[in-house]
Image 1 (tube, rainbow, N blue to C red):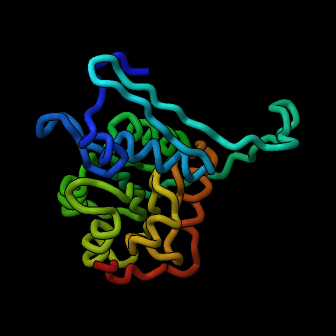
Image 2: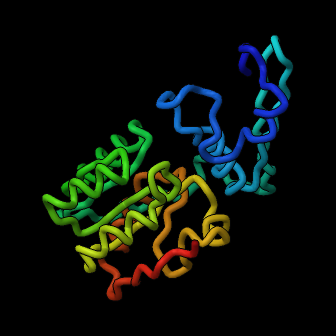
Amino acid sequence: IDTGTGIDEHAQRHLFEPFFTTRDVGEGTGLGLATVLGIVEQSGGSVSVETALGIGSTFTIAFPSIAGAKSPASVAPVTTDKGGSERIIVVEDEPSLGSMIKRMLEARGYEITVAATPVEALALADDRSFDLLVTDVVMPEMNGRQLAERLASNAPAMRVLFMSGYSEDELLARGVIDKHLRFLPKPFSIDQLAREVRLALDAPDHAPLLPAVS
């Protein structure tokens, strides 16, 4: 529930579009609600909003119930995947998430460099080499696929793991990623992240980064 000024009709029509924002330039990415919607829909849920100018807004998130769901006590423990010592660059424009991923992977022995933007990642890659790129897909300057293509031109052996709050099906439909590329949906657990990172690094065949669909 937001007890602010409410949302006008124009903003309501664009609320969940990536990069739409009513804030001044530099004060927001316009990805917050778009990311929420992607995560919720990926789990089969929906997001609705009720708003009135001068009163505020109420956002409601609904998920389908699951018949016969196991209680927490009966869920089997997740096996923690092994780590490594490879050099990984993480590109994530949400600072708190970038820091969390860094801590997760450093705890498993990896050498982690975090970039907040694709441009920063390109600059960092000029000075050092990386074994793996872990990157968000939807970002303001360029998308993760475009960044991976730029980096691959100088480091063709570097592996890539894409991550996003948008569903894989939606990103495939937009031509941003291909089915043969490794993809980790947000949100993810530390074990899911560790597993996908290790699989990407250990994959016997390096999937080529073909030009994205324009």
